[in-house]
Length: 320
Image 1 (tube, helix red, strand yellow):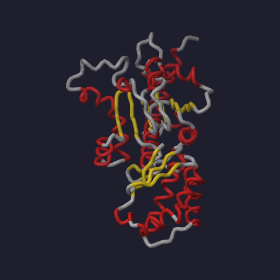
Image 2 (cartoon, one colour):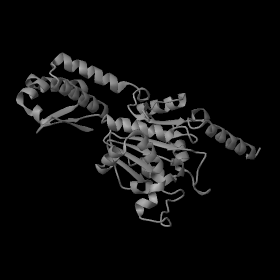
Image 3 (spheres, helix red, strand yellow):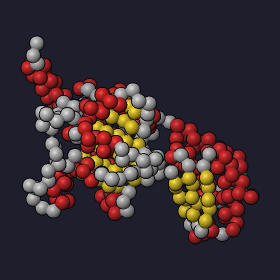
Image 4 (cartoon, helix red, strand yellow):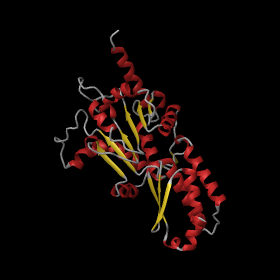
């Protein structure tokens, strides 16, 4: 992963650079050796390359040093060492405890044990599958994690993906241009984003290609590095579509797949890619599967009763 810390015009003066970098670039070398990253300073920019977590920690240390110097503070080797320890401790905390994302003025955090296990699985694994009924927060929490990682520059891009149309993505019969055709299917992802970011911020991120919301069919042929990639409604992918999606994952990326395996809209003779993936991939190190249930539903309390009623009906119809 590569991150950039930009120096303000006033910080390009030799005296400021000396205090920031240290005599003989000693501060930069301390950060480099402690976090196993590469640091290059050129033309008012400090480029940091390395693993996502360590690069993010290094950038955090440099920004803290910048802020301290701007306010007239002193930066020495002891200060840098303390800043490194603080950044590493912050990066090592479980995601479930540090989501720096708000909705309606309240910080977004897990409300059930299942949701906490889900967020901890995301923190510890690069590929996570989450299945559960409507209202359990599968997609909402995934988008919240993505917004958190984007905000803290632990991911370069956020890619939100959905099967555009159930059972085959046949868009031609819908009215309007391509954007009008796919917008209804991507709307739930946009709704979640709008809860966590203001309109201007989302518009700016999308214009700068930091956030992309696309139909699944548009993922072919791409490799996505240093990104957090969310596939929603994954129960409506075919086996080949799921394989295509999972193999888009590049270096430094994290993939979250969500779906409700009780609401598959594919034809009866087409196997769900989500269910197939669970069968094939369970037990592989670095891949986690999380199952949420009725106890994790956090919408209106009637939603839980609706789910229970439909499940009871399905059980009665099962052959004995």
